[in-house]
Figure (cartoon, helix red, strand yellow):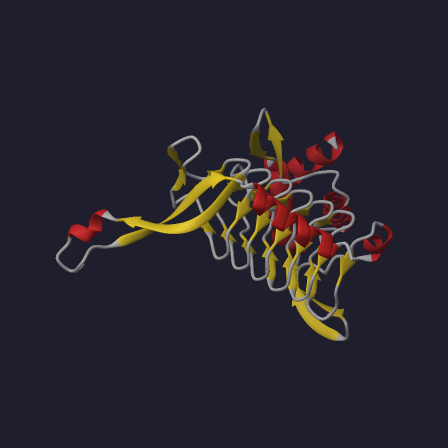
Length: 278
């Protein structure tokens, strides 16, 4: 991938110097296509874990942005429906041979997205460019996996879950949901938040760096991450603005409470996993 990286970085330099869509020729289009193919094969990723921390691959995110900046809107057809975008949808012929299921009428995978083996994508669902969806993961109905989001193996994204996309700045790490996580229906994970391995998150929980996580295991307040092996759920805590006269009876702000994952919780998620296998 060293050659691909060098080529993308050179293309970025030329783009910064004024290269436009009108200047793009066959060589540039071939490079942009090669880059998307590498993303779809899982050969390159928008972020990777280094020394226990998730770090963005800036040049990969540059390549994603170049695929927007150096392409023109075209008319494409899918399922007999015309749509207008700079990118076509991803070909899905490789999914069947790896045991992955995607249901029709609304399951959309954009070019440049990786989907692992034995995964399930239920309609309607949307997986954006640069996203990585690991082996055995369920993307349920009405779910969105945003651009560059990194979803691990054996993850359950409950129905109507939003995984936010983070493309800019390129050095910013995207949203990460690590292996064996279960997110309840209606969860929102945004702005580079990291959900630690093996955690179970209750329905309608908002995980974002701006909302504190009260970790009762380590007895600390943290931001931007949920540690591994936690059971998390939303609660409200007193807000300082409640001292204002306008707030009769006080005011409250959202928070996330994290405790140890209980054996009963793990057994419940295992039963759900067994249902998906049948």
